[in-house]
Amino acid sequence: RACNRNAVYAPYWADSSVLSLLFWLVPGILVAILGGIAWYSSHTLSPYEPVDTDVKPLTIQVVALDWKWLFIYPGQHIASVNRVVLPVGVPVDFRITSDTVMNAFFIPRLGGQIYAMAGMETQLHLLADQPGTYYGENTQYSGRGFPFQHFEAVALPESDFAIWVKTVQDRD
Image (tube, rainbow, N blue to C red):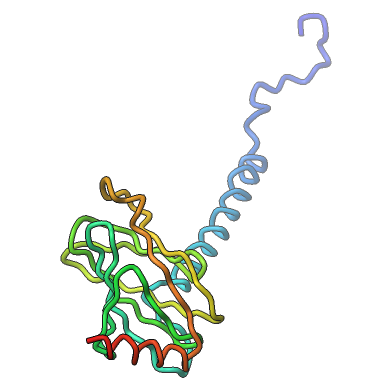
């Protein structure tokens, strides 16, 4: 500067209100938009919301025991261990609890994961849209038998489901 008297002296060149506004406003708007999408999506996909259909749901009570699952069909007066059978096209209202420590009920091919906690009841609403056998598991570490706490979820056409229910009822 001493030898160039025509140079502009601008000690506050980094203090630009327009640039500061841009640097804060644009990311702020993006965070607000992404936050709105996340909030809306997480509330739309709530496991407590029933499946939107005209078909009456099937209620299945799920009890997490020590390294196994108990499935109770209160409307059919039957139960099964480590195997849940579902009718295709019928929404299922799972009522989930635990008789022991916290577990996580999860059928990856059909829907979300939800925790099973002792003394509490959680819900999960699922719908099998095609016949098949699906893998279900506990994804919450719960002790030495945890790796073996899985179950089979079998989706059958409604007529085959009715036959299965009758077969299980007749075993008594």
